Image (cartoon, rainbow, N blue to C red):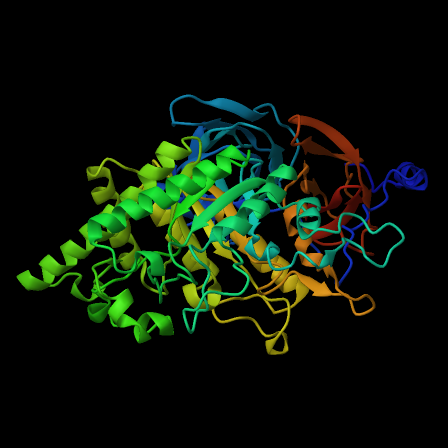
Length: 626
């Protein structure tokens, strides 16, 4: 081994400006360090590992614990360890292999496969002679489900073992990231600028200008039939989020080349799991007439949108309809108390049957109760099928989504919903395209619960796209303490991290079924903007809004190098590491400047960690002193 060498050549590169750290993303209020999303899919609960021998310990190679290892039963060559990621992924870019034993030159190959039969080599180290405990391999291979490590040989009769195989997923370009921007209707008189106090204020003055500039590529609009006061049921003086005004909002969205979603509430005020009032104009219709009204209203509005050149990309038939929608006379069995006008004017709103579900009878063995349960499902899905058919007829290029929730520890209820709903609407000749849920940690559980919920939906119903239709997180309040069920503080950084965690979870759904995430009302609820104190009627974004632009990796670094050296010999650190450019899939090299080794670092056997700097981020050298 050579003694530790100087880095004068790298210092010269730094002096030439080639090793300057990239400038942080510009933001006008607060700070947030937002890095591209990276997920080790091999460590997910749905991944598994098998081996040619030593099968009982294979799982230890993907458990995320570097102190545990899979060991083959004997040292013969061509020992194989195969990781099944549980489904295919299109944007895997990096595999990290860490062997169990130090001080050996492992000869091996890494391969990828969509089906466990057809394999492509992504790293060939079968002639390796360098002593190294591991390596990072960069690759691009869409539709990869299996990653296989084949150990061709080790010196002598040394044990063959693997501490970790990590397979990293990155945010796909086709994962739609956006927001429900319905309140853009309310905020038309406000000015929004990316940097309102600078000479160059950046994008603005419209809220959508800033949203588009900050990376939001899709906006959803809720549609109230006749906007009414949620307490009194009286028509609102300004019919915000109503059909007419939302036509103008839709034009504003499409003018900026953003995707458009339409969310039919089929109500005159808020519809959510606790309240689903009928529109007043439909409240006293017989059921068949109500079903026809759903079809006519949906189809007519979509035709108006298409006529003005604003065809929706997606249409939600109802909003958070886990308990049904357009409640009628069955409300007395549901026991709902919201909204107040629905209860206070029961003679109107509860006079005829509607689409409320009778969950209280779920699983009942009483024949009468089971009949009532089934009849409620039939009414609800008849109305939903009318809405789906209207979308198919009036806007055939629009995808249909059905939007529910998963309450804490209530996944079984949501899966019963999907079973009943999909079975019944298909029997009525209709079928949605996208199954969506809302996710707010304070109401729907931990990030791990979200991961389980999405995975269960995707694997049970592999023919559908899976989206998170609503999420958000506050940047303030509670003295900065996390929201219930969340690890993230209520700060601007915490807001970015919480939202990015949802992006990541949707992106990690098997078979690329996760197709979108929308933040709910980022300008009005748990806001990502603030009023500028120095300027009247002017708003600017939090730094956390950069989560849209900064979450996608443009480059993937060989961020860890593994090196062996002898006691009292300095390691020969590489002058460059590899980097994969995601846009064109090319792999090149980039200079790295290493920190100095601590004095006496190699005086005794052990492990030494050294940090390096590149223009695209830090790298780490793991040095085994033998």
